[in-house]
Length: 308
Image (cartoon, rainbow, N blue to C red; front, side):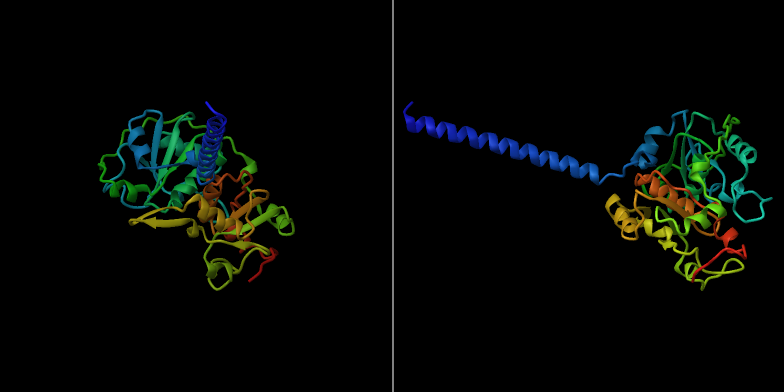
């Protein structure tokens, strides 16, 4: 081969190597982008395909949290309980979770075992489902998930429903409260001036600004950021589902709710606050302490400072 041929061969080899490196780089960028667009804790949220595949797994326990409609049709094998049933009727303030013994009894009655995977659903917004999700995590259960889109998604996919109440074997659930997952009124008062903590009001705009009064006083905790819980939900083909990772990240970070800070969500009775707790868990936040007493306690405490 003459000198010109050798030179052309070298140039061709260099070009092929460069193209190969460029394609590898593009593939790497694609993989990175994929990772960045997936919920960091995506395992907490399951879809219809997952439910179908695990429906007959004896270690997976489905819980229907709808207030109405269970008798008319539900996911086969699902037990039913509503969020008011896990609230303490003897507590001074509405909606506060049952104490450990009472909560354990309720969970055992619907067949929950210590080592079960618990999958919770409601009509689709996941509002009621998230209340039980939070309660189970607070009381130490290690494997809890929410069915994205709930019963609406199940029906939309054309799956069979059952009107039979399943035979339930009493479970062995045992509660161990994790105090790192809860804030009391003393904690939220201290958090007001703490730059490392974001107090997050998940109620409606009317409740936040004091126009909609649901306690002795209306308004919000001083310095609280407002993002209504429902902002995390969108609707796809009539099915309520959680927004994408990118949209949720923008929603919270644009208001200063960032992962480097402890977040204290609250609402009226920590149902909507629990929904935001789940959403932030899904996004990978690791320091979230819902205010269990919420506005039912704070708004009825005369010495607690408020803003409107």
